[in-house]
Image (cartoon, rainbow, N blue to C red; front, side, top):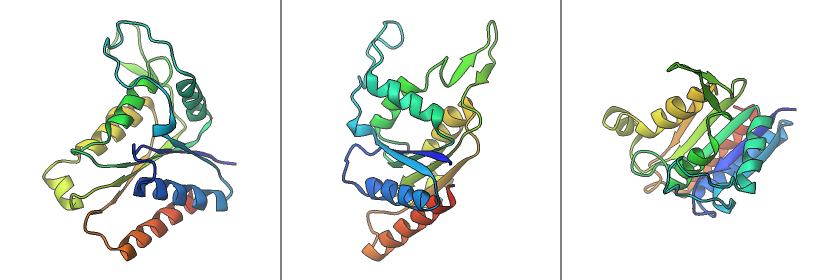
Length: 192
């Protein structure tokens, strides 16, 4: 049975991101997957490391559990809104605290190279946005996708990383949102 872990990364729990996460999971479960949603807003952890990595901070229980879930999963799904070209600070804080050296990657001794410790997993980014997709790619050069896909997930060995952009949300009709929910449900059924 394929284990899928869906992260709802919107700090507003009753958001459209939450609906999308539930739809994806419902589709995956109908296809026989073991699918779990983690709402990042429900996790208790220090968001801002004001000392960086220079001072030891106790690793919170919710982060220990999140790492365990990531290790057990074959497919990771991140659902979030595009804010200022990237993603909410909550997701960045989660990445900073969980995707650590020794867990997700490990630098080689006396080398600039690293070992990717999360190989064997795939991922999907489901991103809502108000920016038109073409504008996001051509003018902004998709900074949030590049960050999540290349600098974080693929850096740790998660590949392929597929992307689904939904928007513009701000001007979307109820029928359009229902179509997007159905699209995400079908992605879940395909477990992609």
